[in-house]
Length: 255
Image (tube, rainbow, N blue to C red; front, side, top):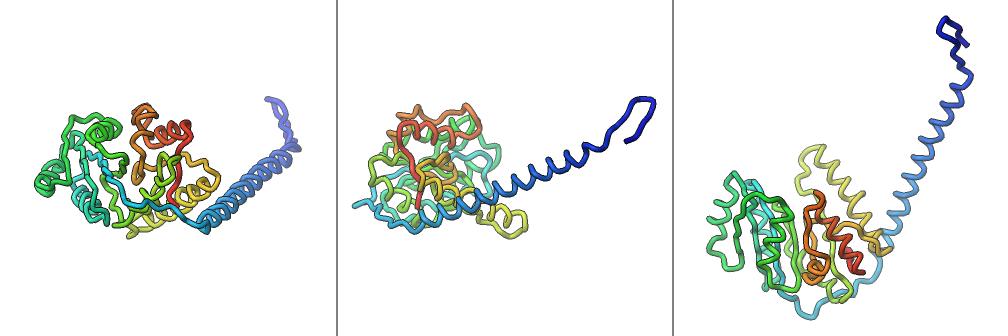
């Protein structure tokens, strides 16, 4: 105890505070570790489940790509979609008021490609670009990807096979970080694997998927329309749409 003109300060309570703080930290570590363990176990169980999802014939599908100032990646993104192992596929790219060469590159590389439709609009945001693209799509299923997403040749087919279940309204893709040349991107890749893809597998087992990522997601068109379309109420339009579709009793993760 220390006395002074301003009063007295008692130190006998300091050990109690220290114990309380230490307890909170230990409890937090235990809870986080326990959560990670449970998520891991559920993800493994989901992975080991038999996968019988298969469409007799791949239906027509439209890939929607919103793009704003994506000149460095847009050509590779569209090309990766066109290299898909599905034949009945259409691509709609909406240039959302880009100020770089995005539109120019799209026109020069895909302007004469009958499978690619290029739309230009003034800058109105990603949600508006997706709604614009959706209004030009006429297929029962649509796939949304980001302008910097390169997909594997069998990705769209693997997404669509889950729609053989009429209760499935959306399918979340398995998104991975492609550029792992630096420590930062390697850590980001690890974060994607542990906190996104593993969680989605675990949540699929529990039927509680909360986000079908805009970076790679497949959607039943009628489910989007029933949910009120893609809104710009928040910056997470993919999460908003997923929750809206879940309220309709639909949604699923890619296994």
